[in-house]
Image 1 (cartoon, rainbow over the protein chains, first blue to last red):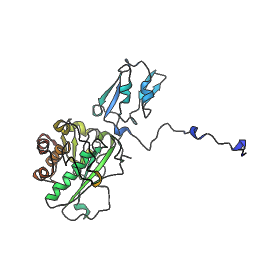
Image 2 (image 1 turned 90 degrees about the horizontal axis):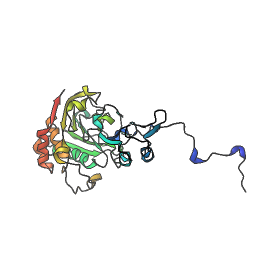
Image 3 (image 1 turned 180 degrees about the vertical axis):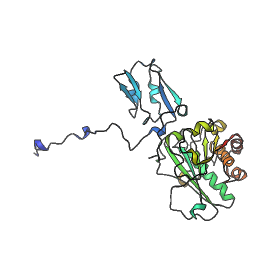
Image 4 (image 1 turned 90 degrees about the vertical axis):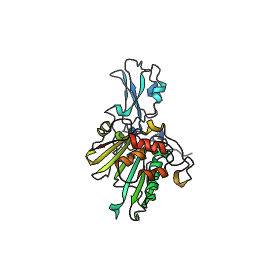
Length: 108
Length: 202
């Protein structure tokens, strides 16, 4: 039987520590035609948007007790608008907003 | 030699506007060919065009003499840039590589001023042309039969590409409208786009 010495034990592959919270190699904010807009008064913090967003673009701000949207990586798939239980989220055309500009030089 | 080649870049959205972007580049090249010019039209595969909504490029080149730069697959200095979806101006530097005096054609129902505020390098432009192609002929046609050299089953310019090509004639003198009408399938939309286009010279 092959025994790995204790001092040479390697960590599990699935829990590789990564000191980054975003992947700057692939910024997907410019895929968006329509964006989700949140009405904070209607939101009851059911967390459906956080669970269903494929790119983790909805985050819970625990200090303010509200969900926050990430304009840099949101692809505009609008899954969150479909999954919202209280109709706090609605879609809006991107050119109506000044912010959310991700002006890249090349698509990738 | 290279300076005589007129480079045209088309920006479109992946999959949903793949056919429209291809039709604009091919229609332009085919119409210029009828005037006796030397032309090329091709896709850019670097942009991962098989993902929905990614920004992607289609290229066309028009020249009075034979085009020798056959093995360059990107238009480094586009003279005319066509944006098939207006929201792309927020996500991409669409005028990249353009020299002063270029023309921008945008498919949008907004005014030219609303588009220009999202373009920081707007001093490069000679004119901007806005046309509401979606309002003229509805949603884009999604079809892949003509891609990568296959036979196009739907026909060139059956959808949104036709009014955009009509609007292009208003802002530039690359091709004549009657030559485009001989190439494009939806001729009514072509003429409508030519009439309804809003041109703003800067």
